[in-house]
Image (cartoon, rainbow, N blue to C red; front, side, top):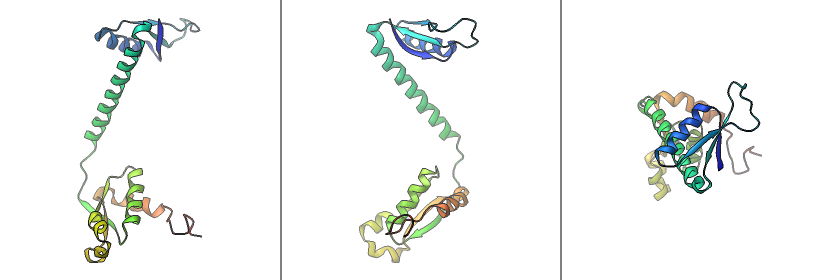
Length: 162
């Protein structure tokens, strides 16, 4: 027998055991040797046969990954639909636009660049089309503007400008 994992409580251990049983992998529950029964929430060991260890480990990892993906999709479905798109800033050069887009992406604000591919093809056209536009949802524009205002400007000399 090999310890597949230590579960925090009996409920999570029983759930993992039943999932493994469903696919034909026999699992057993045991108390850790250093745990007394008087403990309110003792951890549980999930044990499998040594021959089934790899298959059981892979199966539980896949189950957890699927559960995490379902949870992420559920959170995305609960997000309100974004309001109308608004141009937050315009840029003559694409590099500064990409830095600000990355800053907003890191802050979790959905945004995109408009006319960036056209400027990439011919940067001379940037002034004629109004530059590269950073577009955000109207309901996040104020927060995005605050984040960009607080960002450290990067110059040719470095982040501090000197």
